[in-house]
Length: 255
Length: 255
Image 1: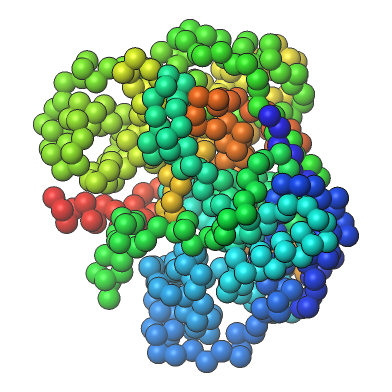
Image 2 (image 1 turned 90 degrees about the horizontal axis):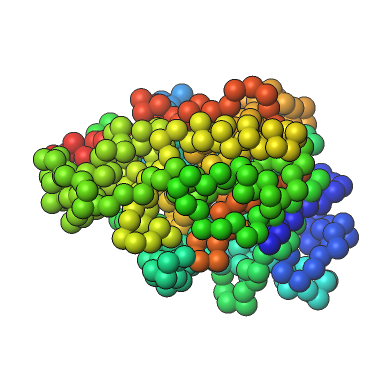
């Protein structure tokens, strides 16, 4: 069994209005079952999701949180506008963003943008993945899956990895439940977060700095599905998540 | 840029005393800078780390926790004996194991073991990785890195992924701090958890069920280091970890 990952070369700096599917199609010889992993930064840039802090007017809540975490109230306002719920206010902001993804600062990024601008995550990454995937399937006449990724920190450990935030024609989880183990026992609890594993693997080629590659092709897996696939099934409900309960308890004590 | 992952075929069922380096060497044509990813289950089996619950005598603490989480007190005793600290007691046990790895049930596993036995994680996975890596470097005369992995759940999201728990000649984190971004700005906070990304990527080939592959070769990265590399630098200190503080707060409220 083999798996191959290949960075797409010579993707230009992405501007608002660029057609990512077309840019990828012209630079890659895609095959059936290829999974195209795309950094959310280029998706956001193609959608023109850049903004200036000076255009935001911080409200009372943004000012309150900014006084706790020493951030610019306008930046806190930007984070709040992208968030459904705030789990940690200080020393950093950990939120559930509008697409239910739990991340620092709602994923607002200031690297690789330029001109003092900030960049938001796409508000519907599944929709973005579908748009790119459908066009790639039309152009290539192949079965193509798409994963849109974001860079995230993790619980308990230093360092960031890439994770999936938007999906097209690939399921978030591969289930081993009901499969038999080496000795014939039925596995009970195993669901593999394949799309995060693929996102992380792609990050090994993407890099973070100026010589980065925002698009990686993953070849050799058999995970294409015609079923509707979306990222939402991935996120644990707050009431089932003891980590969120602990974080909210700390937040309530502080306030 | 390309990355290739290849499962090592025909690894037999591992027994106590088996020489994993020798088994891998005979089945793989290794090259300089190859990273050998090995599931901890086969490392534990080669070390004979299986046990029977009937051999354990649960103490008062094990009985107390078992009464909360409806587990066998002997199983709770086994988890406690492998743990430095318990962050969650019920409905499941989340602990820091003796090697500082935060995981459910101290990583004690009952799948793919057979005979009603359970399997513990190696107590010094860096040491195990070094032993296998040194022998592979001797046998091949190549520069070889080793990552030993365990399957783990994650915060906020359903599903498990493989993570690194032991390292040889590869650093846990790849730093982008000080590198310049596309627009010349210096990146400030980017450290990439490359060994977890590699562990997760390998899991895409490993699988969980009877047709699994416990050893995967990763080729195409340039992460070999002569420096001493260990997994401990990876784990965030409890006092810096707001998630652990939240979990301990909930635990204290219950007790």
